[in-house]
Image (cartoon, rainbow over all chains, first blue to last red; front, side, top):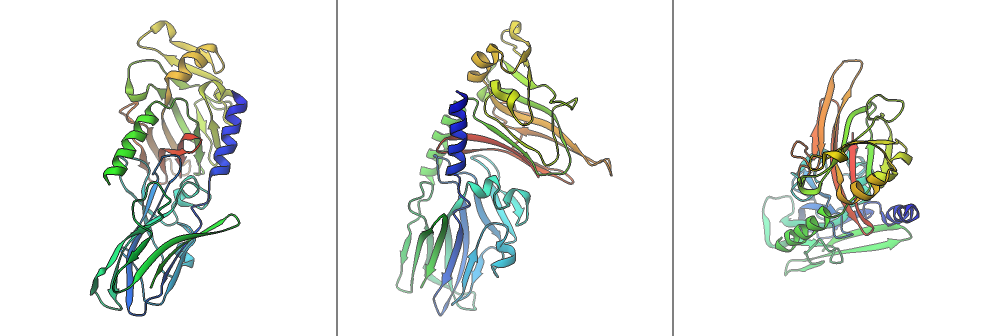
Length: 181
Length: 176
């Protein structure tokens, strides 16, 4: 019994991953700004929680032609150039959303929430660059289709542009891309 | 959204029958978390429950500042980094069972392991320089209604939650 538990302990460590790695959002359009929200959650073992959602700014705005990298919940604040200062954290079904600053103890890289969540989805709306005028039909929910807790598609195609969500694995590092063009 | 809620209710059903999944405690704060660690019956059904005895050298069960520990099952709790060598059992449905048991007693293995889950931790942290105390009753409200899942005090905050992984659920108590 003890051996079994030990084995399970090892398995749970080896199956833990560091937040699905970096999220890279590339807005390759020349005339549209990205206005969106990003989501990360647990997508293994049948559990969809914890769920972490960008809260402030709402929305995140990434201008035309800009690429932004979100390494993890904390370090993105100093290094992304388009910092998220507050995340909403939902720890389980029936838990309220708990707004937490980027440097909150629960969001550190290597912590339980970071190790058990990965980037899963974005809700976005494209705006005419530098304006508050949306391109009405260039929007959507896009995400990781292999993730069981996400129901959004990984491709969105419109007459004004398209978006694609995918991951690239290099060794143990996972890079999640959201490309808009 | 409907699919997600369905999935979650199925998940909740599974979780409520998952007994003695590991409890991981991590105190990121610099001050000691002192209090009463409790188990209970899933769903708050009447039955036995128990409290952890003080871990040496403390006179009350204590998770020192910066410490972490994992309890895989109740009957292995005495071998953890912060050992629980004794359990205080109360059994309202069968008072003859109430009493003090060593962690590896057959009663813990045969009765408490299969019936109980981790319920929560009623604890406090005190900043000795100011005398200010943050008090929490963290845990699973479906097991004991006095518990809540998250809390924040003047100089600390804390979470109680369960994460499901391919190897099963693990419950976390984190103090920041």
